Image 1 (cartoon, one colour):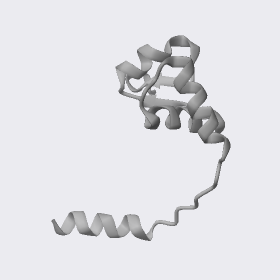
Image 2: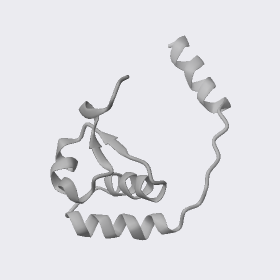
Image 3: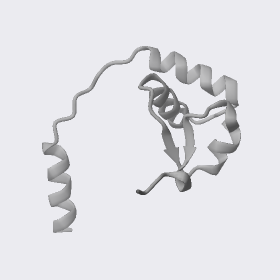
Image 4: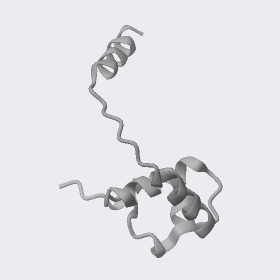
Length: 83
């Protein structure tokens, strides 16, 4: 328990800067409709990755099957290059 509290304390000391991205919400809804996704967190992660021009690495096979090759920025974690 002491280790968990220490780690949590470290997290609280981390400087996290929140940058508002109002377009995130509309893009999340668009992705939900386009791919038939029903979870807000999946579409929010996808939209944020797309907005930031980043890959979204996931272990969620359901998500990958839903988006298929139409969302190339959503990638299978097993393909992540370790070296």
